[in-house]
Amino acid sequence: MAAGATTMGAAPGDRGEAAPAPLDRVIPAPASVEPGGSPYRITERTRIRVGDSRAAREAGDYLADVLRPSTGYRLPVTGDGGGGTGKDGGGGDIRLRLVKSPHGGAGGAEGYRLDSGRSGLTITAARPAGLFHGVQTLRQLLPAAVEKDSVQPGPWLVAGGTIEDAPRYGWRGAMLDVSRHFFTVGQVERYIDQLALYKINKLHLHLSDDQGWRIAVDSWPRLTTYGGSTEVGGGPGGFYTKADYRRIVRYAASRHLEVVPEIDMPGHTNAALASYAELNCDGVAPPLYTGTAVGFSSLCVGKEITYDFVDDVVRELAALTPGRYLHIGGDEAHSTPHDDFVTFMKRVQPIVARYGKTVIGWHQLTGADPAKGALAQYWGLDGTGPAEKERVAEAARNGTGLILSPADRAYLDMKYDANTPLGLSWAGHVDVRRSYDWDPDAHLPGVPASAVRGVEAPLWTETLENSGHLEYMAFPRLPGIAELGWSPAATHDWDGYRSRLAAQAPRWDALGMDYYRSPQVPWPAGGGGGGPDVFCAGWGGGGGGATCRVWTSINFCYSHLNI
Ligand code: NGO
Image (cartoon, rainbow, N blue to C red; front, side, top):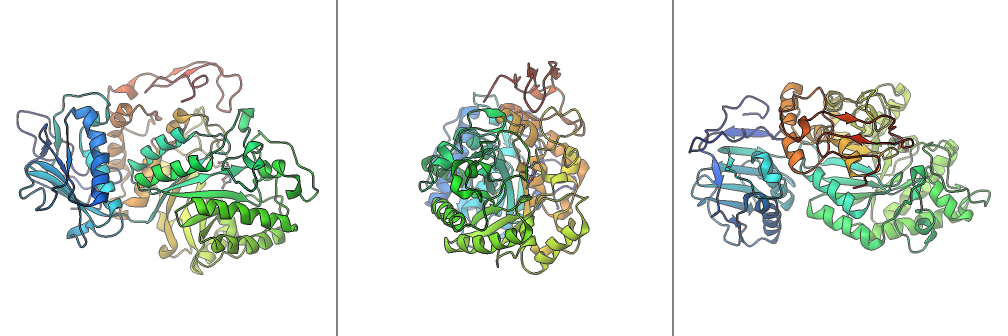
């Protein structure tokens, strides 16, 4: 049965308990769901059996970390994971099985199969990422209280049946702008954990912009010591040491996200230009910049030192980055004459290739000559001119892969509506339905579906200063973009989606996350998100004149609290 269709609902547990969540109440919607049979129950005797695979053990340890605090059970992760599926003699345990050629939909790099029944629950996958995604599905099938960090009463039931699941696209990204406001390693890790809930598999870090350079480069140390010393609004900024960056990469990898670093060039480079006078055509370093205008800075395309600089930066960043990609920006190069832009991209793309990485650029890269194998990230609007759209489509027909981040759909920094206190509105307001209700394959005319590699939700941070702000803008829109990237087009259905989305709110409450209580979503009554918003006067999303604002779910005083 296709996900999104009505399930019969699983049989309730014994002892007069409430029925467990139906197997298809998951985001992203699974590719196929076959409900049936008795529910599975986690008890104090449950073991997590992982066989002798290291990857399965890692997934098992992760699952145990999620389950132990709220269940209060020991849940030992044990080696003995062989044998049958959960349905036929799993002995009441959870099994995580990594197998070479699994039956059913567990194939591919990220697919998995989940079998749940009275005698056990088994997740089977061909690759570690598939096991991890299966574990995320299992989390959502358990009661929301499983996310709490203190012992809860349970019961811990999972509906009986089978899920076979695999993603629609290989690229399901989220971008975080750590330049406009700096976010600490801990804040980035918190966001990674939230992304992993929805099977996002790329973390694109926007590491440099006019307002701050955030990644250490040994050969150009002032980039961070000076260029990283502030941010929008004049705060202290910050930067990642190489050890910090490696920590982020490792943490992301442990959640099966690949880090995609971006150095935005040739525009959006004021922080670099301020740090090194010789990078400027006139040899004069501009002051640091803490405003939010765009399009005023450019590296000096005619100077050779520019390419020494790019070579050093790319070499050091590529050496730190195990992932395949390096994003070179290319957006809003309004201060770079077009011919210079083309020249710059011609010189810079081979540098990226020399250090073993694949180029990604914002879609303006298609106005130059994208390198073979390069990807372009489309961030246009419905209103973007036909010539620009056609340039992107033509590049796609010629082999450039596309990542879709249409600003009027996928930009998480756009206001939900006129009352949203944070965010921008240059691409219009993006309510929850608008961010979900589009089809990546059909979004741009003239683009072959084979060119669409997936979707990405950028979170620009001109107005966002702390984790509460990020969460308020990302939730509840991020899960919708994640679903567009994962779920078969046939599951797409706003009404079904918004009720599944509503069911996520108690999880976010349990995790202490903030989110926007969109009136488009039928949120459950009660719960932490159900209280009234309390607004204190005089607060502007751009900062300044701030007094206080309290939001429902975890009662932030936004203007004073940085978490
Ligand atoms: C644009 C611009 C960014 C802004 C963002 C704000 C791109 C690719 N360039 O998106 O510099 O931060 O909008 O929404």
